[in-house]
Each structure stands twice: as C-alpha cells, then as structure tokens.
Length: 333
Ligand SMILES: Nc1nc2c(ncn2[C@@H]2O[C@H](COP(=O)(O)OP(=O)(O)OP(=O)(O)O)[C@@H](O)[C@H]2O)c(=O)[nH]1
Ligand SMILES: [Mg+2]
Image (cartoon, rainbow, N blue to C red):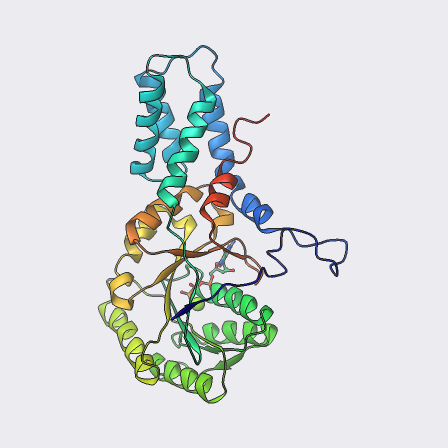
C-alpha cells in the first residue's frame, strides 16, 4: 500500500500563487492560527494573568492555577499534569519565569503529539476506498466534501457513495457537494441498505477507473449495536470487491463536543476498524487542546483537521504547526 502525499492545494499554499488575484487565500499556518485563536486566547488570558504577577513564587497555589488554565484548553489531565510537574521541578519555590512555563507547555504538547499524524493510505492499484464514520453531526459529510476538494484539485477522479440513507436530506447534502465539486455520486432510495450503496459505489469506481471512492455513513451512537454492526457489514461488502479495501476508515470527531464526545466515539475504532481521525470544527472551539486526548485515547493518527464549513477548510495535521498556533501570541504583547 502507498501513501498519498498531496501537493499543497491552492488553499494550503503558504505563499501567494502567481495566478492568484489580489485576495490570495490564506496559507495553512494562517488558517490554523485563525482556527485555534479561541484556544490561544484562553491560554493567553489565563496564563498571562498568572505569569504577569511579578515576583510571584512557584508554590502549590500557583501550580493549581496553572493546572486549571491548562485543563480549560481540554488538553486532558495527563498533559496538564506533565506540564505542572515539569514547571514544579524546574522552578520550585523560585520566582515564576514565564519563558520556562511557556517552553514547558510547548515541549510537552510537542512530545505528546509527535508521531500522531500520518498520510492518507492509498491503494497500490485501482481505486482507493475511504469509509467515513462517526457520531451524529460530527462533521462527516462536510469532511467528505473537503476531502473531495483536495482530491479533485490534485487531478484525481472521485465517486461518492451516499451511504447515509437514513435521511433524505443527507443524500441531498452529499449530492449538492458532488455537483459543486465535480464528483460522481451513487445514491439510493431513502431507507435502502447502506451496504448495497457502498457496493454500487465501489463497483462504479472500479468500472469507471476512478481514483477515489468515499462512502458516507449515517451518524450513530456506539450503544446502537445494530447500527454499529452495519459498519462491519459495509466493510465486508467493500472488501469482497477489493481485498485490501476500505484502505482508510476515518473517524470524524467534533472538537467542540468536549471529553464526552470522545467517550461516545470510542466504540467506532473496533466496530468500524478505524485507521485515522479527522478532527472537525476546531475553528469553533476554545478547546483545541482536545487533540492531545484524542490522539492518546484512540491511538490512531490524526490525518486531517477541519477549520470551517467550506470545502477549502481542511488541512493535514502538522503537530509542530498546531502547537505553534495554539501558543500563538501567548505572552507576547
Ligand atoms: N465551524 C465548522 N463547522 C463544521 C465543520 N465541519 C462541519 N461543520 C458543520 O457542522 C454541521 C454538521 O456537519 P455535517 O457534515 O452535516 O455532519 P455529519 O456528521 O455528516 O452529520 P450527520 O450526517 O447528521 O450525522 C454542519 O452545519 C456543518 O457545516 C468545521 O470544521 N467547522
Ligand atoms: Mg452526514
């Protein structure tokens, strides 16, 4: 199996493209920075308030306040604890040194996120099949639109499978995106079997020599065992057509939903055989730190982050850029 290495899409290019008009699209770091601005604001306000108190000593009360500020970014207790411990060891009973604290946050987050990303897996030959799963409303269909945009911009041909046959509106939503983005779509009647839609979509991908086939699924909760089993059936149907497919099973997680959303998404990893995560809606969240517990808990690579509602609002996950964006402006005037 191979890996997709996308060329930078127009929306991700950090420099102005020659043929772009005056209002060039922002580069990837600008987008991340904008998306993570609410998180950076929380860190900035809380940590700056803590650190600007001149002459304050690193004591139990200080460490407790620091822990609180860190936890408010949703980075999870283990990351917050590591940072607090590190600051305690390095500055115990001494006067607070803001640079040490910020450096400690940066290093801990970088360490926790190192190796938590990965390129999209690609079929060695024939169409690459991507199955997209997650709880209700997490951002699956929009993420499919964003992925489609990336693929078509790279010159790849895409067919979508409207496997959310639960709601008629879901099929319409995906059809609208397919029309806009120049992808084909396979759809069935409302209430038809999602596995048969997946089968037809993969068949069309093979027969029509498409590069990519992306299957949408209805949102579900992990305690809906019949619906979770349905994911297994979709997988089996696909793998009968192409033995190593689906090549990717992406779990879409809503970054605004907090720790509870993580608990809800847990069952998907096994039931659907997930291979990677898309962390959607980071732009709306002051809790961008949630990527740390997401990566830790699922032990799956975070392949993309969603930064808005349009088809361009997706970037690959770059841990260093992510941490930089999270700490953007912290302690700077
Ligand atoms: N701000 C923001 N909104 C997003 C993002 N991704 C999705 N949304 C919005 O979230 C809502 C739900 O997105 P969908 O893509 O329909 O979610 P879904 O998981 O397909 O939902 P169901 O099919 O009902 O389970 C829509 O209003 C999207 O526009 C994102 O990255 N940022
Ligand atoms: Mg949907």
